[in-house]
Image (cartoon, rainbow, N blue to C red; front, side):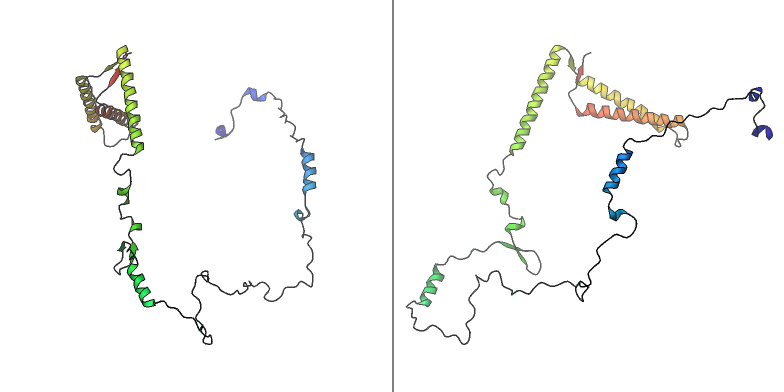
Length: 258
């Protein structure tokens, strides 16, 4: 037990060693310390010191009165309607006397009949009932009226779609011209349908082989090699799926000649 705790004896331990003195670097002192202290003393206010703040003593004449802190209501003003200028004249008082001596030759019965005969009938606005009690709403504001069919450009293709079609057609034309130029120079060749079909079948066969290997893996992945093999098979199968989808999506494929 003593051999484990104490180090083994050695002749080198008998040689006296010089004590190494650690030389510390001088303490850092900012050259702005005196300036900061002076500025702190100048900006220091009396309320920031210890002790009670020196405030003015309240006057004895300004003492707190009863109900002085309760909210005060605004002064009462006479109420007046906004449409008082358009309202009918008030009902005459009982003591008012009617104007006497005014005569008129107007036949009110005949004039009222003529006005009603010549009056234009009021057009009823279309409405709809939205509750079982018969509450009515204006039909024009409900969104059920097909106002769009009355527009000038109804049934026409919007301008932005026409512009987009032109841009797509122009881009496709430029791409076709570029492909023709590259094929004329011999830098690209088009993949034929039998070659494309052959490549597609080969990719699918490779995927079937990898899938057969993947199905043959152990149910319990408890070792590192099994884990790496499973991940490798999954990555290869995903890459083959992306390649197959790419070839099936595009019928025309160009290959660069290097």
